[in-house]
Length: 437
Image 1 (cartoon, rainbow, N blue to C red):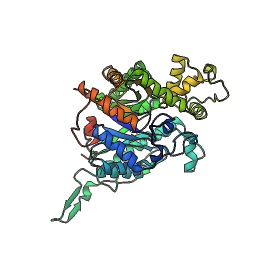
Image 2: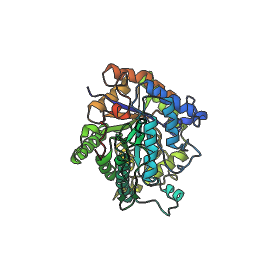
Image 3: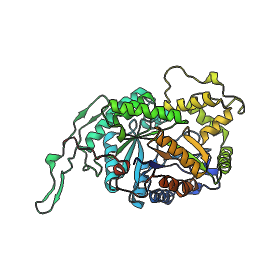
Image 4: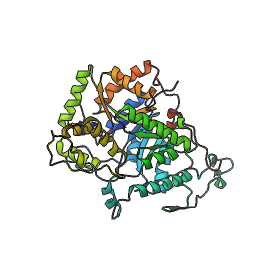
């Protein structure tokens, strides 16, 4: 029977922008690795597929009001690997601001040292302020970033395949450590990259880490259809999620790939209470802790419109929001625009809608209601599973693991224990054959 894939998306303090101010949060521990190790161990005890860690190569806007710093993901995931044994380890790395050889080494090392649990969240980086951190005068435009990303993935894939599976011999009797006839340079010369290879690390337990992608713009969908094995996405309604799911699966099939081997995993940020009223009270409590100055800056980043001089309790000035032509912020812009057009919120209401999880699906209810909504999306052609984004940590995840997961299991929708040991096995993905094979 088809079953859900569930990841724990870990964000310092939690996914609500005011999470660090909630009395149930632990903001004093966000630079303590044991905090993250314990979260990962909790997710592993619940048999989650993976923990997911986001990243970006610049300091996000307005750290004054929110926990917006970044920890380097390979260091973080290595520490998580040492404290766990089965759960997948998905980290973010940019094709715009990294070089393929270094990235291939880092992920290959993580996959080896974790026993085959690594996943690469492939991003092109949307933050323009990153450019100055790398000596660039300006951030590459959307289309150019995706063109480099296609070539980048091809190069990294070739590097991971530059050792044949049986190249590592380790035969003390013959004195042969590695069969160098089965280790191949890639000699790549392309539009953006030149890499000779081979990689200085053997082929990994999974063949290569799982390819994860998070863009839902037209360029992002085309990229996912060609490369991705799991797709993180943001939707506010079942209808929108179903449309995206159907479109992506069709694109995957058009690329000659099996749609069942590409997992669509929307984000869900559940506020959970013993009653629906209690759950909604938790959501209101967090919303009221949000700082309007920070929220307005976030909205400006998503929409490209500064509404700081407007009445927060007045309507969103629809005429100021650009809708013509291509928007460089991509899919998240469309999510916010959909909320404005569908719900006609005040500015304050819109800020609260986005404060919960930056445009991902925020819902409130009892454990049974949350399980019902997950089941509806899963069986209704909208998702293969979810990125669970607790509004605050650690309690927001504890209640999901303790009260929602058992309901999903009773319905036969989620595993009771791991059947395999690698992330590919958790996702039901085959180990890819090497190119030389």
